[in-house]
Image 1 (tube, rainbow, N blue to C red):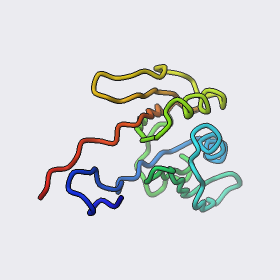
Image 2: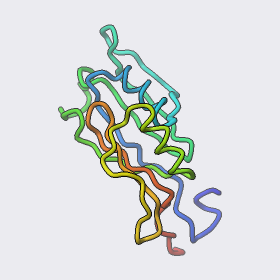
Image 3: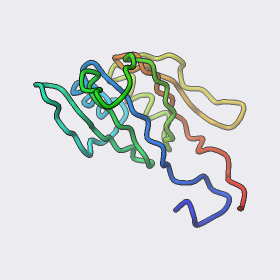
Image 4: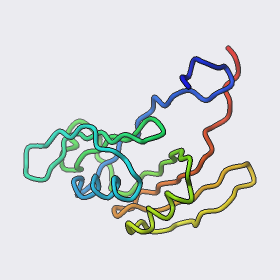
Length: 143
């Protein structure tokens, strides 16, 4: 469903979190294996193993962009592991099993929330927090 087809649905994602990793190639592999993100574009940096820019698509829409911290000439310095993200999934239980099987550290096990979500939080190998659940956001009022 497109963001313009109904006034009571959440719009399609247009915000792309940008992450920096010390070992971006290893994290691209981890994010694909643990969460199912799909590598769409990778622009190598100037040195071996450096990623200047990468885009990973999320199956439910949107995605993340990332780079090697050493390639961050265009971005202010930021520490690895300082981000927290939330992504919508239609199968939080299946994704929780996949993520933990791939070695994601459980921060908060899967559970039902009072506001109608079923979600969990895990940490990636460089410390970023990833929350997943089936809550898509509140419907938007008609303009």
